[in-house]
Length: 366
Image (cartoon, rainbow, N blue to C red; front, side, top):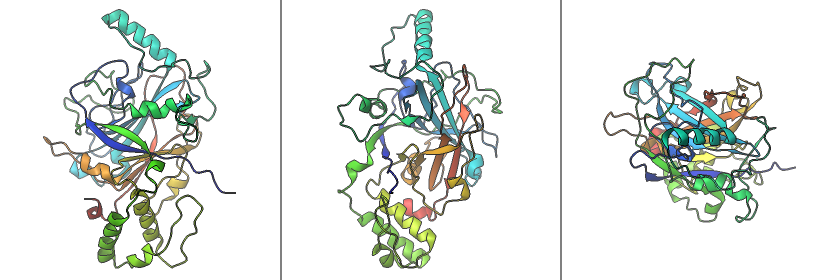
């Protein structure tokens, strides 16, 4: 029996973040660069690099609540932008998950209105449609119902919220104090990449309109450098949805994986993020054992599942005009607690797990 294919959302760079957006929905914006937003009653992560002990820069912020869960949910991915830490691997990257109950968020907003006299607005219509009052949810599902009609109520949960990513952004300096236990000495200057919002599209919307010319051009460059018979690769078909057969031609495993990667991203070359909760990652190089068996959640012991990955097109966008910061990678695979556990009254972000796959040939994505 064929495995069920999980839907894939693609993140694309949208408009630049202007000024310092404020408001109760600021943290519902997914973005690259800038400063991390904090959920109500949860401290914003302020991690440091394990190599140089300097503060890390925010790479992406992803707002991604799960279907059937009463929690708002935010993921932050950080990296060290300093050249000497460029080859630091996982020691220079960190991922954090923050959650808060919607009822707690409403209480926090009410308190803020009383203190500041601000007129708060309901940032999300249908706020009572989150399910039960319990704080624990059995294995959650992503709040995206791709198979149903777009007019259905379910479709508005995760997808609609993500497609409104251009509404708000971070408030620099408004984050709570750094969580304890992260070894952070609050710096006077936190490195920042230029901030942009992230808009979201369904990968299936791009199928049938793809030209492989760009992918073929890159592969021919790869052939010249590596001595690979690209024409042989291109004449074979690799599986994309589990319905096709692997080619029988003898090809090095790494080349096969690389070609599959290039073929798949050719449908949307500008994608900077691929989201597929509990789906299959798109490997750039041969996966390690950690990719098939990532470490279990450090809090509840439940296995971690793949959630999203950062793509090569993002590399050229992570720049800082003033300080010359940058990062280099092939793809970053993000794994999170399958249960998305969150202890009662917890107020600090929980660290998750990432795998760094280096670009086999950095010149291909420049």
